[in-house]
Image (cartoon, rainbow, N blue to C red; front, side, top):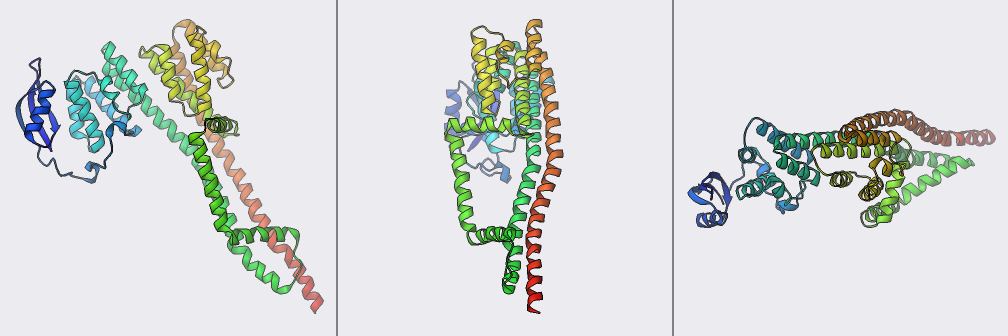
Length: 412
């Protein structure tokens, strides 16, 4: 049951909000434990009935719930705009609670707001929820320290926006090649599973000797038709094994991470996008006043490729013993020479944030170009592959016809 209340805190400040309890007396006791003196409390209208499917609680602990990037972007954008307009944090949070339709997010915001009333900072409250990545919490913590929380929200929103855009580009880059591969596999199944068997019966009725290519294609067709269930089982076992090893075996994870960087056309996209994300976060965190070691650690955690992440950790280890960032990066080929040079300039001029920002923009542009190259290259390559597949099957079907003509001539 939800109850709305008006209360006074120890500083004689008026507080309004909502609390969930089984009874009104229990709600009053909960508020008293929080140091609030209740002046008015009443049951919230329609608190037991969700007004839409989006307001239905699907269960689970909200403290462990992952939040979507778009939800975080909307939250940071709106909080930043409201605080920039002069609305205080508590009022801004209450507005967000009242306008939020997702029950889980509403619960999170409500608990954070209650913690604010009890004297906790926003960053301290956010640490209780797994849905807020450490990089955002650190930026907000820095904003609380320097009194620029509105700017901190805007920085978080910018990071989130760039992250969403980068993830979208990566998805689009790999969607088209995957579609073409699936198309080729489907084409092979259709030709060998449905088209060839009809020709096999025809050729068998004439008793003609079949060429080696035709025999090989028909043998493959027989395997595909007769043992399709076994092929599916094998594919499932391989897929399950790969997923299990990737999840539980560190060596296998590192092998896949290294291998992905060596794949032609694909590797550059993964490396450039990883470095773009690292540089973007490093730029924002250093400009927010976060110590360099902590900023590098938070930026490292946001990099998806574990091999690149391992190289960044090696740089962090060197920096902690007094080696300059550019010198530490120069030891690892995953970092471009231009990145090393720009960081050296940034370290020497005291403008490391600006140098990292420029490199983030450069890597994002390179990632876009590599994505376009991949898309442009896949079309002719897969066209050739499809042509070879179809051409091979067609030739395999036509060659026996010459033998059939010979059998017919002999019979006549």
